[in-house]
Image (cartoon, rainbow, N blue to C red; front, side):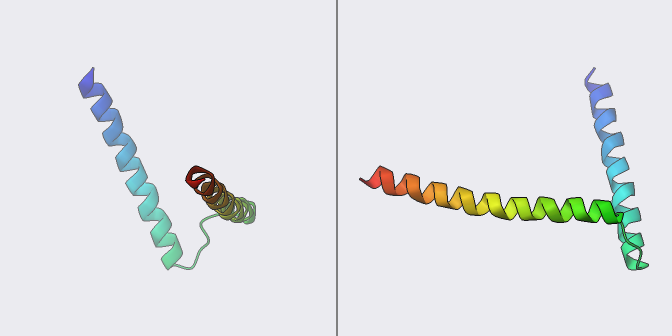
Length: 69
């Protein structure tokens, strides 16, 4: 059973390496990796990540202030 799981993990890792290699080569040739819709989704995710980071920092500051009281 362990051999099967390790083989599956190896296949997934090799697949990831192939996808990464193809993506890097496409970028070097000047081609876009994502469609315009994909770029929009990625930009939206980055904006949400930044908002969550700010909210998390504010929450942490409030908790630290309350813990000191």
